[in-house]
Image 1 (tube, chains in turn yellow, blue):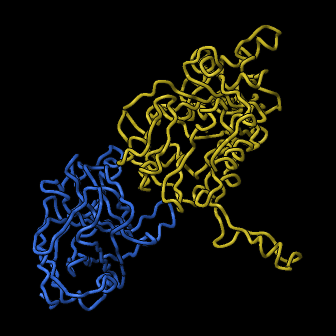
Image 2 (cartoon, each protein chain N blue to C red):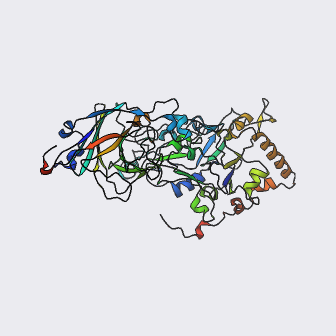
Image 3 (cartoon, each protein chain N blue to C red):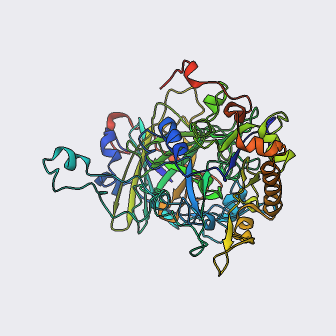
Length: 342
Length: 226
């Protein structure tokens, strides 16, 4: 296994995500507008608990157990939620504006990437949900890279970004089977696999990823793992409040999450019971591993400090008073760059 | 096996899998075997296929003809499903290839080795303009050459594929491709991928790991058939 010299990473604070999908759209407009990419969402935001995108991806296998590759399933277009074609022509230009209504054409769709997955858990008055944005995890132990028989996937030496070389890719899709996060798509026009590139052309110009920079909630931090002066290091390694999603998948993701703190539950009398969190601990443990419980304690303690008027480096970081400081030096304004190419 | 010489055949005619001249070519049946699990190049592939059969196609009828300029193979095999369209992520196309040694000593079992290339003429059912010329110098190293020199045509009817794969005997190329001469022999191997069984890459049925021998009939002067 080749290790990169440095590793870029992202931290997402789930307490701040409002599920607005600005990240998804920022990515879509920038990277997946060509033919064959219609159904691709390199960035997705799912409601948790829920079946996710692609549907039931957590049951599709892949990744590693004790270092051994596990078999995985190929997610279908329908499971991702295909790009539906609509009868725009008929509705807008067919002279039937009063009668014809917009509807997906062809077979009735059964699943959308941002509709049917919108579930949540619990029972009133203790229902709960939170949002989980996901991109490629640019893993330290990438299952996709190791599955490819053509060595078409590369982990960049300089920054650890995992990229697919489309000149070498033959569209075999072993990477899609192997990725336990199911974040790789097949382009049926180009016959190659495609996925999030961590916005490396922006990164190379000192510009943070589009999903991070466009986020209105200041959810996403970007930077090198080992930059001790920057937020990523402080959140992941110093304060240890940012955890990878499904560490049990064995790929060592480089996208980390600050777990969500739910309000307390109501008891049978309608009073708040602070001993019972609305999001069950076991559910968070199933996503982020057992460390999540300690993280919640740290977050609560630091929140309490701040509430009492004391200093908290951690809270100040997470509040992100200074937007540009979230990006570990990748804070250049993309409008100041003359971008070339199509 | 022998590639019989037919004088004056047009490439178009050779490429027609149903052309009458094929029935006179004299076919040979080759048994196919799946590539061994242990030879699959990655852990992920080996773990996914540990309990699955590799090599869905059990045998192939092979014929070969040449017109002094082109060498054409016709492969015919039984396949209950015609997998032409890759219309979903879990669909794969049927495919077939002829492997030829680019030089003496090129190993078939590993699809060549550095400096000992294997040349493959590759057909895939979903290619719009089918026919790829591929060079390989070891497992996982195949590269497709440009411009394409291999011509193919496939027809599926009633549970059987008939596929013709052809190329000029000699081609101008800086790449290590097979250069063939009438009157001489070459090794060859056959691989068939069953798309309906998700076969692709090294997951295929092959004629074996040693070269089969093909004698390329001498081109007769005066144009009569040999």
